[in-house]
Image 1: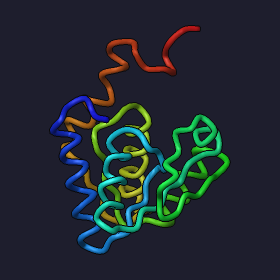
Image 2: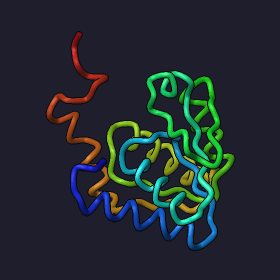
Image 3: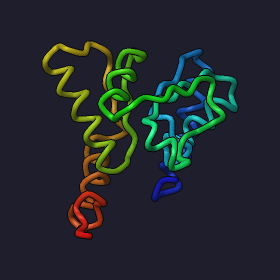
Image 4: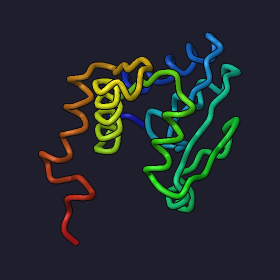
Length: 146
């Protein structure tokens, strides 16, 4: 739920603000982590929340079943494409390697003028530091040997 209480508090506050402004929140569809907290807060404040989750993650019981709309796709690539189609802007909160990868892809799209929507992060340095820490410690799941 975020390694620091301030991250959790910020995610909840952002969810509330998104709902209060009448914005639809589109995210990866999980019930865990900071984005899960953000989704819960947006829903509690009466907001519309759309999740886009690959079937494999849904089957691991990570999917948030209380959303306004939960769309199940076949792959992570499909997930990112659909999320981009449904979104008018992008926000990244501190997370892991997947967060970093998705954020860098959106930044790349913006730089190449493929994606013209707004891109924001909760402190780029903090996001990069939080995402790269598991790599430095050898804790990234994709980097572990069997």
